[in-house]
Image (cartoon, rainbow, N blue to C red; front, side):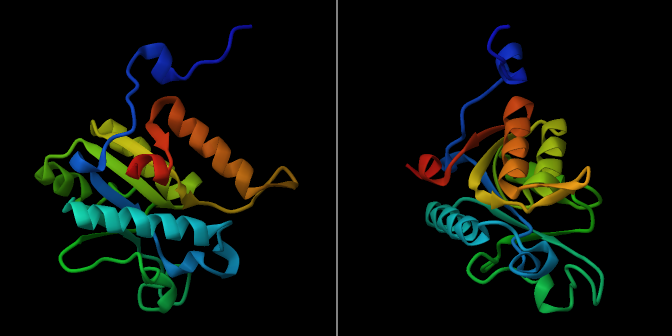
Length: 197
């Protein structure tokens, strides 16, 4: 059996990670819900630190930034009126940076994200945030349908352990499978250091 290849390799439609100099930074659900409690994410502190580096670089370069915020239920997960629904300190919006509010994992669903990105004129998106297997991957899949090229920053994302078939898949396993799936046919996957070097 030959070495497996990605769909990008087989189709010849893959692309290298983009440069921050001509891309829009999209940060998905960097919210306090993920810091503790039932949705606490594995190694979230490292991911948040890398998101902060990406934000700083984008601001310094004058690149457009989009912050996606999940709206949950009052008194429940991602309470829009409580602290847990708010952005994590240090990686929230500043000034006139765009905030897109969503109610489903796909940040394009029933929002003006596509229209906003069209207005910016950037086909290349740099994507990071939470959770790898849910809102991040779902939004990247939708972005491909709209013709965007996504660069996914692996170490600026995080996820959690998931129950499955009476056992538990570790957050490391869930993230690895998610990144492999994205790299197969949906995004160019890189790290913060490589992107900013």
